[in-house]
Image 1 (spheres, helix red, strand yellow):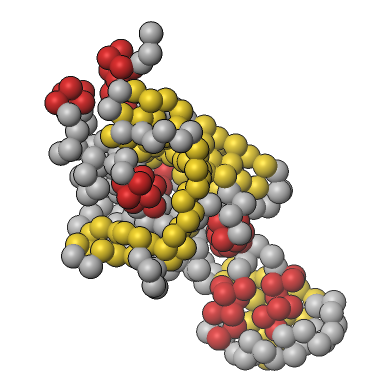
Image 2: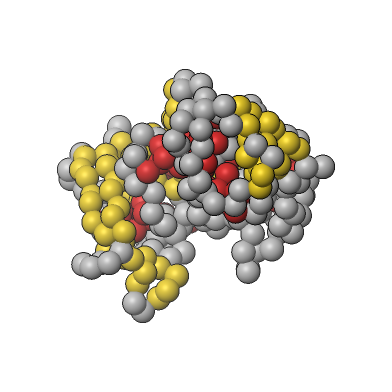
Length: 316
């Protein structure tokens, strides 16, 4: 059923959309603008469809919020490891092999399908019955993710990602490791001209990508990297480490399997994804401002390879 909210404005001269954002912070500005244009807002009993309409203190505004629009997402009872949940956000652990969002090649069995089943109080994003995916992990990457349950939480978290205040730390097992202990990569990433599935550093266009890295262990022909993301571009860590000359083991796109020496290939038996793990995630809660931090160790197949490398190559 549609719901209605009636408020009395206290400020003079604001645009209608800005007045509503100030009075109803639980809704995003884009969402409120859409409702105004759809005729869902009355001002002193008169429907107003112009977002820039000027209001006065004492004006009475009624906002009618329609039911969430179904977008054809199937709720599926899939294994979902929730680390934290409240009325605004869900923090969860995504397994390697799970796709985040339905697409042409993955119509179901995704993280979003699982969330549609597991989350009872999903307030929706932009009037649609869906969770707010703020950031993504590649199918083959495991680790900690945050998802918004409400418009205002979604927008606040997106802003944190934009200004780079979210702390994201990844672990990666690589083929090779540099003599330097730490460094920073800053370039622009775009799709490779000869393979549209891959990304690469480009001179022009592309999007700025920044990764700070350090070598945690050198294990014979391999290394264990810690990578902090200042930006979150598609395949960012995979591309940056590969183009440094240290591809992630098991990576099907960036040379992480076929160039490994036989002892390492043997350790990768049964591993069907890149050994890249979103280890730590910290952010400010979108409503309270409290700094929240989450950490999850890599999955067992990642750790099995790491134990094998340590057993063979770790210094005595």
